[in-house]
Length: 79
Image (cartoon, rainbow, N blue to C red):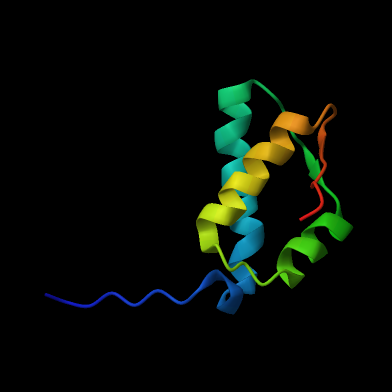
């Protein structure tokens, strides 16, 4: 066996925009919504957060945000 060591999301802040984009695309298809924009402020908040729940927490937050968004801009709920 080869151990696979993956650093926590809090140690990979540069991965957050790519993951957000992936989850927005994924859930946009599921919920038939087209999100075109994510504000710089929202992305800054996502990158500043510690992510104790790791990628699953980010995925759940993006799904919830997409469900609640009523425009082409992703609105991040308070977390």
